[in-house]
Length: 477
Image (cartoon, rainbow, N blue to C red; front, side):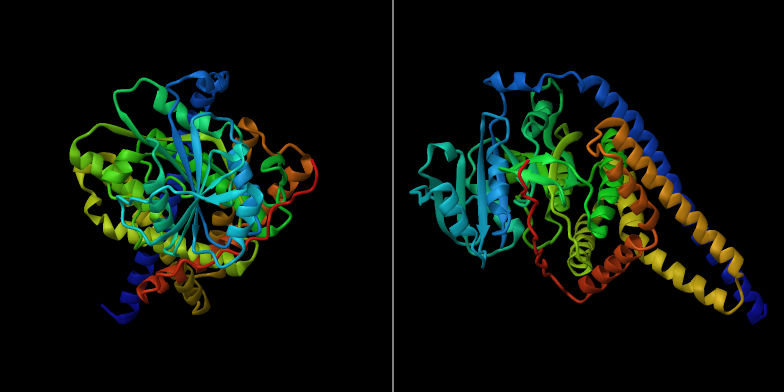
């Protein structure tokens, strides 16, 4: 065999591998979208007329602690805490954990909510950094608020601190920069009240983008498509992930992640599993995987449920610098979780988790950006060398582009056919236009950030990266 013949064989194999991988990714998205569509229709049919307010009168309604870690959130912390306290629920308290902030977070909280130092003792069952003080409000209107001031230890350490302080059997771990819909706890708590032969260990809901939305007194009063392009692109991205992705994995009982910005957990199981891992930057995904492994290893029946309509609104990055740090961190967290639980890979003991969910995340979430980048670079090289025609190259790119746009449009249609949070034609036009541009501008950057995350992980970078907040729109509503 000559060198030219060997090269031709290599090129053919390479082309078929790239086409096979791309086709497999596209097919998987179509299958997940179809499953999600049927599941969403079934969910809405069963729950559209549920009177969630009736849960307020139930003495058996789950007692819940909302744990909100805060680090340098002074610009938005007042509105965020007001949002949490305004939730329509009875049996809950709010635990804000100030994780060694360097800004004015504590002074803002102290002044706004009339905080005084409490004599509450801190007896940690999960090891954490030192707690400086625990505050309660002297104002009866804020009796549900607890503020913990501690040394900086990272988000996972702050969450573990909140778990230690809490006394309620259920936890809702959220980002303090989130604005919650008023009936969010009622919807998250409903699965725990329903008769089941399985123990519900976690429920998760939808996260949406709050940039450009109008917030008043801690409540979201007007939903608007973000004016910033990056934030608007993330609206489309989140719709794809939550409506077309997680809904399907929930139906398959293969959900490996509940967003760190918004999830409810069984406190006993979370503590038995060891709490949040402070050595990873992907503590939300890692805890869910570890809790599921824990229940399977113990032989206990359990369930993790995703609920498509409880809404948590969060501020998305509006600069490439901050977005890049976020996505690099997400990739490092995914790598850490997959590496630590590699025993699950194709392991029938873990059923669908080991046979489908874990491999999917490994190949289509972890490896996909690397394969995409290598494929593009090699394809460009072959085109430049004249081995592959420019016509084939551009036709392939056009196919991928049209598929990406189609999938985004399906996600946007699914949103408008169900929850209809974006009501004006202007908002829909803005979201439609960004769906056309997202594959050309936003997606390549997220691939770059994921590759950077791989590189940073290999170099031993364990940093979290700061998220600079711009604050919510507080115009009168």
